[in-house]
Image 1 (cartoon, rainbow, N blue to C red):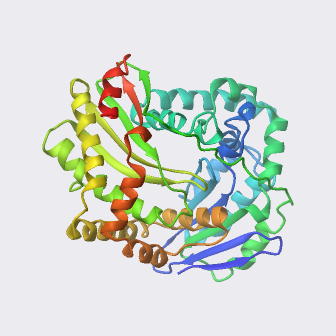
Image 2 (image 1 turned 180 degrees about the horizontal axis):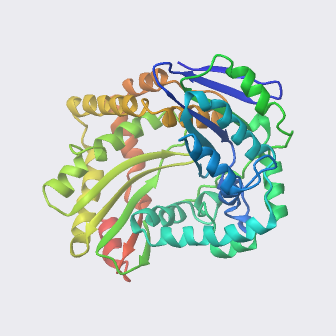
Image 3 (image 1 turned 120 degrees about the vertical axis):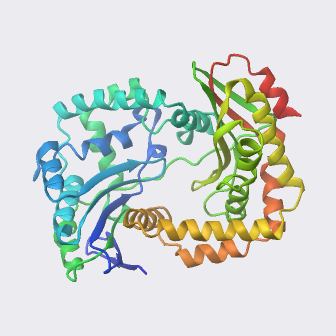
Amino acid sequence: MHKISTLKNGLTLITIDLPRLESVTTLVAVGAGSRYETRKINGISHFLEHMFFKGSKKYPSAEQIATLVDGVGAINNASTSKEFTHYWIKSSGKHVELSLDILSSMIRESLLSEEEIEREKGVIVEELRMYKDLPQRYVWDLYEMLQFGDQPLGWDIGGDEKTVNSILQQNLFSYMDSLYSPENLALVLAGKLPKNLHALAEKYFSNLPKRSKFPFKSYIKGKQLKPRIGLYYKKTDQANIVLGMEGYNRYDKKRFAARVLSTILGEGMSSRLFLQVRERRGLAYHISADAGFFIDAGMLTVDAGIKLEKIEEGLKVIKDELQRIAFEKVTPEELKKAKEMIRGRLAIRAESTNFLAEYFGVNFVLDRKIETFDEFMRQIDEVSQEDVMKAAKDLIKNEKFNLQIIGPFKNADPFMKILEV
């Protein structure tokens, strides 16, 4: 499905040719994210992502870049995470060269002008404030702080207003020079590809400057002896919660059992939590479960928006379902359904060129290799009922619970009583 080659400067080129389509996603992934930061410059990965769209030597203004992209009906965006960042343009197949030209110029010769930096500080601060006004989104930032603590994995990807306003032009240049090396990048194209693509990639990306690369500080896992609760007081019409615990990292073979476990618990309208919390009791509109994986850490989580007056009941039902799956073997029918759901959802996502480009690019910059969909599904298919129960017993323990709540609550005692029993 995909092909991997290396440009003369060490940059990895990944292509997924889908000639039946008319569009192409051109994406650059880099192994740089917020966990590479220090507390003083927390938020700089995200800040740099913004600044790449503010002008380069060839295209010196944000307006010019936007006009070029809009002028061919393309779409562009970027995203920063804890461990990677990616930039992309989705266009019709005949405009691939323009996409390569713009992205390479952004990364190779971004202006990072002091005037634009000062202006963008206000934009990013407003973005941070916007997220705080979205409880269903902000609860996740708070949850990661609760679980991972005062370490880079626990810090907000966007930083805070103080760190954002203190970032200087030299900080941005130094950070870019420390991680944006060709060897730490992957150029990915998915869709209807031109026959001369390799030559085009060499034309626009072979002259990226040589830069360095440094490792992030490893996550230090502490010993958790009792549940932890974070309350963020806000007058809301529902309680937004994340209940979770530390999970497996992205290299632990048990992560496949954790993926099946989270699917059985909270993926889809027939999942255990959806049926118990929403369908049978009407306590929430939204509820789901997920397993997340970092290079050296992970988490198993349940998130929901629960009626304010029913939050204690909702929390107890969620906890009971988590405990039940740790002590009662899932049925063969549940296991089969979960595997087919994972397979089907993957097939649906794989029809998106954006998903394909991101999947292959992120996999490569994190692992220096790619786990194909077939390889992934083979591991999922090998998961047994016993594997699911072992993962549940290993992860779901009262003393390991982390509960983050956004809502009009000031006293954590009622919630602690539920988690400790």
